[in-house]
Length: 72
Image (cartoon, rainbow, N blue to C red; front, side, top):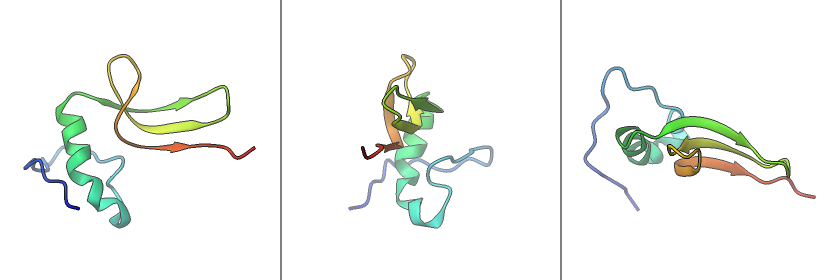
């Protein structure tokens, strides 16, 4: 499946998720997250799980990111 919002990379764009060859398929979702004004960050939960990716204005996960669950 190819996701294409028709968004273009601008010279000043900094990629946090689609910055490696194996994650290039996330380029359009990441550009959309940037266009939508989402911020990149990390959340740590009391369970020890972490989320690294885009967050909305309320600090909630939205857009591309990685959620890591600790086995236990």
